[in-house]
Length: 195
Image (cartoon, rainbow, N blue to C red; front, side, top):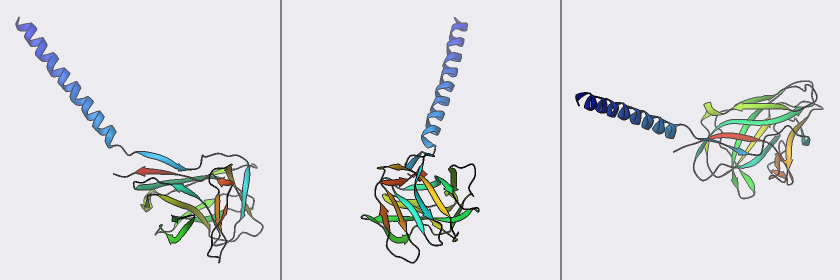
């Protein structure tokens, strides 16, 4: 009888410890950062969108960040650089103001990246870590890259898809954005949902 009571109390304690550990695992999984990808589907496909690398020129796409605030973590896109040298750029983020982006850049610090020089005849993945810059957004935004130098004779071709929102571009020294409506560059951003 004593052994039975001793075993059942020992089993109860083990069961309680096991239940407590399961609760800890469940709580920690809820506390983990929730991330999602916004923008266009990543692909290395054929390039129908090509732009000259001219200082101050911008290329980007509209993205839906959702109603709640998110932090931008990482920008990705595939590009083929037809010049013999790498092309530096910076990342800009604008709130959409109807059909066109607003004038104010939401990025305070300069976030730089580089499109590597042409290799092996194809697109290369370009990734920029945005997490150290704490860019927090919500709603409809435009994420663009702005060329920091002019590369004569250079054409930057972006992997793109049809009927996915189009591509916005802006020439240096011109205030107005233009939109290519049918073909959208495959820019995408990993974001973290904020509480």
